[in-house]
Image 1 (cartoon, rainbow, N blue to C red):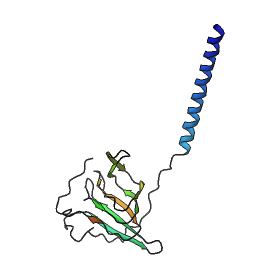
Image 2 (cartoon, helix red, strand yellow):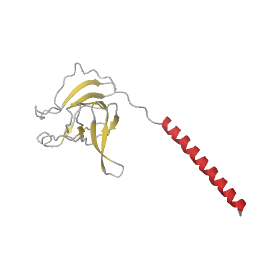
Image 3 (cartoon, one colour):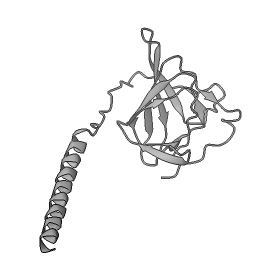
Image 4 (cartoon, one colour):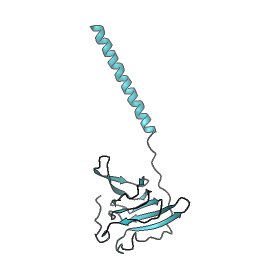
Length: 175
């Protein structure tokens, strides 16, 4: 009986040591597979021509966009969206797929989690993500600094807005 208890204790101790060693190894490997922080692209905005997003956008609405380049070889249009701090953009969608990178400020995207529950995705400078076609974008900037969002659309830059998007005053985003 005594020999059995000693063997069980040694086996238990060995299993614990092995589990801790394995946990430590996995933790170290996990760090090796973390994505590196994204560098913020250097986009020259010195000659940018800022314009309204839509002809029906009121002049008083401060939201602006600048066409950076149209790359005919890959069929992409690159723009920068500029929004003041603490500003909520009207909901919009693009019919073509694309990507975005946060250049400046902090953006809050309203998204859905894997279970379909609403959540907020906070994106700081360097954050990059894909945009599915026809995905309704609900975006706001956080208070503090203006937001610059670098968007690449694999097609024409042609944002779509719901009827009345510009008649409803934009509410200020929460910080």
